[in-house]
Length: 424
Ligand SMILES: Cc1cc2nc3c(=O)[nH]c(=O)nc-3n(C[C@H](O)[C@H](O)[C@H](O)COP(=O)(O)OP(=O)(O)OC[C@H]3O[C@@H](n4cnc5c(N)ncnc54)[C@H](O)[C@@H]3O)c2cc1C
Image (cartoon, rainbow, N blue to C red; front, side, top):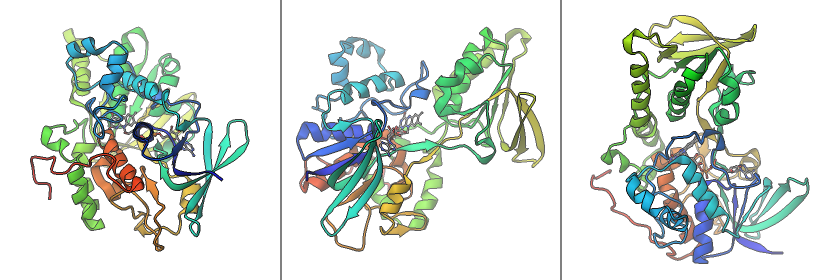
């Protein structure tokens, strides 16, 4: 029976970077299992003209090993794009190019297997390993064994209760699959206030002159607000800040999370500027815009009648209710951590903190037994690790912790004192 040192469940960017670092360093033997047929990064949201929200240096490997073959700069070099990138002079790179870079990396990794949906994990704690059962697309089940497990199943689209299972309404994750069809309508509404909502609104605004639709944007947030992206704000996404955050009592962490909302949620200034510019230009000379934008409006009820989606909103300040109708709705209402039921069942005996797993600084679950074989968690770690939880800039640092811990030695340096401000 073969026992891997590590099995990774799911292959998004977080595990892809880990797989690349493990393969290149030869640190240990790992296998990453992905249910889809190939690596693909949020394909429904690869809208033309959109950028990654972190600088290109936060690629899959650079923070662990800038000399790696799998750096973004080497990807550019291999694709003969370094000169154009030099002239481009941007730190934020096209989202579609990030996906292409990630696929280029994935195509060179031998420790990743596709069409493998993990359906159960069994904890053989007395023997020091885990049994992982996989369902292939052909319908067969295969079993693998590993001393350590890492869960990298990412997030899943979240819809508010009134928007669940409504024909004509799609989550933003499906945007590119539905947009051509939706654009034939008389009216489209975007609901939400984050970056995805803004990108979709901008995309529909740009193509509006070639179609008939009225475009609306409704959000329960108090405004169409910008993400705080100052240089000092970026220092919350560092190993130093995570050390500090992780050591706080749970109540303080929960308070800190809402205080950090301004560096985590909001819209990139460039996207907001582009939207405002379109609105201003298109309304020149008194031209009437076919656009409605309304913050402070929370969706309360939704019913379908005569081919229209009738939405009842509550104004958050006046508490007055009002109704608006649309042919189609894109709900850019966010994502929630995807922790599969089989995982919760398998590790029900792990230590908890309120409603979530108690996760160590090195990202593993904690048990009452003194085990050395660990279960690492890369999703649902917001309440234990704070701002970095869904940030690609910190993904490599998470991987450094895990690779070093499993190896029992410092395979990659794990730097500290990397901020100018004292974050304690
Ligand atoms: C549209 C969008 C844009 C984003 N842009 C940025 C950004 O610019 N900067 C930033 O810092 N963050 C960004 N994020 C947040 C975050 O960094 C990304 O969501 C990132 O993809 C998370 O990576 P991941 O590896 O955790 O999971 P995911 O990318 O969600 O991948 C999880 C993988 O697990 C697989 N899987 C799930 N269940 C199983 C199973 N049972 N068996 C096998 N495989 C399974 C899925 O098929 C999927 O491929 C963005 C998020 C979204 C939604």
